[in-house]
Image 1 (tube, one colour):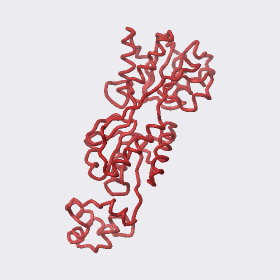
Image 2 (cartoon, rainbow, N blue to C red):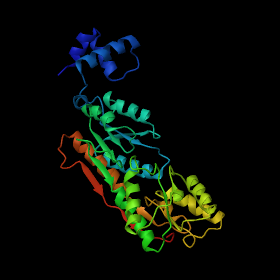
Image 3 (cartoon, rainbow, N blue to C red):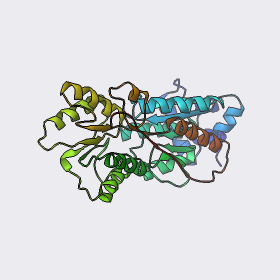
Image 4 (cartoon, rainbow, N blue to C red):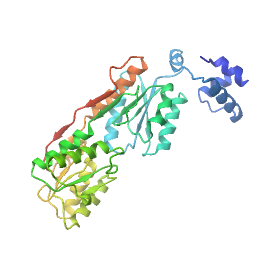
Length: 330
């Protein structure tokens, strides 16, 4: 295994300067930095963060990648991860990918550069082939994501079961004309494929057809919910219930319902997803699918801490239960 002395010899640069490059110190010329990085690449040299921590040169730092902090789901998840990490004196740095693969790869590069010691991906746009090479630089944990990759634990719920449970609830309440919102695309592949499958299976179980006019894709915010409600009011053939896939979208629909004279649930039942505190502030209060966000974040942090310690995990997939919360909107 190559050492820092090998990098010094190969690059012809002093040990002090090589050390500054390794620690990403800004006071290094571009020419010298490139020579050192080239030597490190040729030698497959990777700084040993454990040794550096033992010398007191750095603290253990975890990166947490989310789509965006404005989404309350991710805000609560971030809080749960940070609190659990703090119990072990581990720092957490938050990154917003904004659903950009390029940004995501930049954050993974920080693992390669040893700016962070491990990374929790709670938002993934990249492929398994993109991510796999970074495993040699530190532990990776998937949270709220559904890629399957050897040596990468996943903390998740069953999106398929969650959607099936939600749609079945609406059907059991007597609704038959079910509309559906997704944060992605209504497709067999992509990030919402499992949730889409749950919707299809619940409808098929009752021999009900899906009306494509009642499927709304790329829905995330309260404003999206307001727009969806407006579109429904303009339809000649209207649904009598909707699975929104997001409490924010559902809340936006309840606001717009009052503006358009739509009674919930008499004219349109509305089912959310996540069980955020927002559900108790709407009128009527929102029925929803409860996601165990606190447990999800804490478990993701616990798993990466175990990987830091070199512990072998007994499994790679950790599926947490969801729960239907019945309130007034359905």
